[in-house]
Length: 235
Image (cartoon, rainbow, N blue to C red; front, side, top):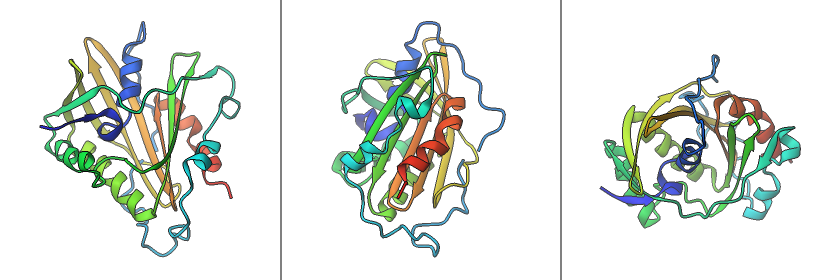
């Protein structure tokens, strides 16, 4: 059993912990129509992936392409950036995720440890939250790293993590992703801890050498995904 930070193994876990701690947090309903992963999505070596050899962006360039409160509309506030090292996380009941810990810890690509990255999180007055993450690297690296984690997470329909000393039960459900970019992944995660439940939607889109991940309240993810991708991939 391996230990690692939330940023390298459980995508969106930090946001989930924060939301579960909110006063009055209640179960979130999944969207009635969903759009996510598509096994027929083009691989980065397929014809038609014209951006696969694009030079990766720097972290500074990615930060300029993140959504801001003006892009999101009324009711949003930017959340303070959290330290990159989160609570120590232990994965229980999912060997595939546990195996990724070795790769992540040794820098072999088991986690999303791409060096060019940017992240922003926002809270909405309704109580929902949405987080955007941008990464840039060679297309094949983005594809392999992201696919490996999403496959591991959806391959374990139910497992548990210990975030510090807090046990959190997680169930995952792969859902159809919107046909955007060159590759797409999407799933719903239900986090249960100490009587509080929360549903988080997470959708990842790879467009050439850029990877976009939007996670949070399902309705907010659906609302802002297109805008985030348009801004992230603008010429």
